[in-house]
Length: 127
Image (tube, rainbow, N blue to C red):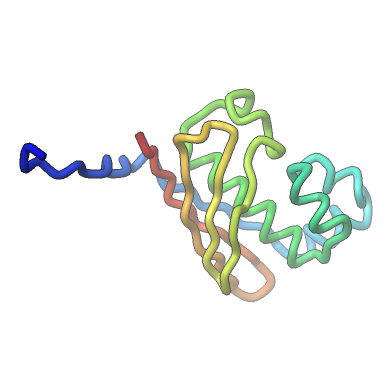
């Protein structure tokens, strides 16, 4: 070898996004729209895992995806809407996001204050 080590490219910060949703509003959305609303916001893989969900689960998915969308700087059609992004892992209040643009990656945290659930996402581009 020539003495040079290969280094992995560093991720580049794209943006930070935050979203909030009152649990009462999430309950109302589920009551009024049920599975048709879930089909609009969950990816096909997420729908297989969660064919039905509670208001809290809806709030988690919705706020995470909205925050990721806001942080990505992309247009809605670039991400193919909510179905073009998915939560790849949830561990406690932390989660990881991925999307149809495979170079983008999101890391986030959930937070709760009273009746309001929220998510904060840091979006990075990985070359």
